[in-house]
Amino acid sequence: MKQHELIIKMILDSWLTQVGYANKLLEALSDDRLHDEIAPGRNRGIYLLGHLASVHDRMLPLLDFGQSLYPDLYEPFVVKPDREVAGLPTVAELRAAWHAVNSKLEENFKTMTADQWLEKHTSVSAEDFAKEPHRNKLNIVLNRTTHLADHFGQLLLLK
Amino acid sequence: MKQHELIIKMILDSWLTQVGYANKLLEALSDDRLHDEIAPGRNRGIYLLGHLASVHDRMLPLLDFGQSLYPDLYEPFVVKPDREVAGLPTVAELRAAWHAVNSKLEENFKTMTADQWLEKHTSVSAEDFAKEPHRNKLNIVLNRTTHLADHFGQLLLLK
Image (cartoon, rainbow over all chains, first blue to last red; front, top):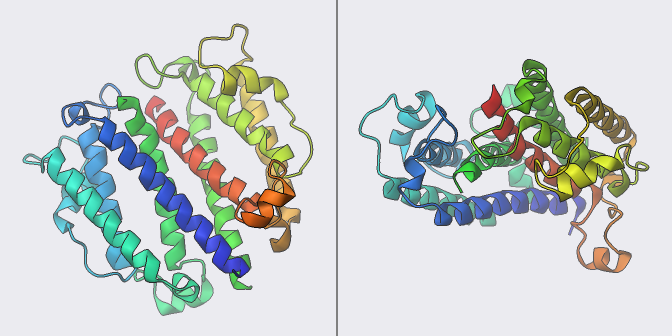
């Protein structure tokens, strides 16, 4: 395995590890428990679950893996803060979305070559990418891994 | 810049970004505020600060950058849970330790070549490393970045 292939694998493994931690935690938390706030006056578990599902869903078009599967999650769980939107999906629906988007990401990860990981992601122009080659697909995964870890630490407070 | 050098830079930038976020948050939190719990019955801010300072301090020997600067933080902030040890350092002392270890890490990061990043870290044997080349120094940084993000998300609840 070449050096850059090894490092790409380390980054993908880090992603899979964090998703695995989150899955295990979500299994341990009941739907009722996910309606609780992580701390007084702060986001509820259901909001963080919807937020993570939507952010991961939006990785699909960013990485050129196809369209978002759940575009309707964006407004209530990313644009708007918790408790602002009425008629949210159920926790069961959000769990299903979470698993579906992560599965689709993982399937696509398996087909990517090292060179493809270093291609530009879809929201940067070819011109900017020529100057900023770190704005590649792999960096989206790296960035979303810390994003997940950040919220995982919060969700852990519901355990 | 070669492919593996670009990816190494992305990982180091991700580390620096998370440390920067944490520094900004810690500046915004008073010493008093850091004595509060992040959620009822959970870790206090002072514990998380000491925990992060100790975990980063212990990266120094792991990455072969020299000895730990603050070995005394390990017992009260990593081995033991919060509130179990009396006579903790002050928040001011922990802030100083946090900045000192991150500065020393960053200084050393600047001297590292790509090949050195892919050398084994100091707690894996040469024999195991031959079979598991991902157990390199760079992976320590990747792993500690998600660790930091995890606790950063929790500290953010004090804001």
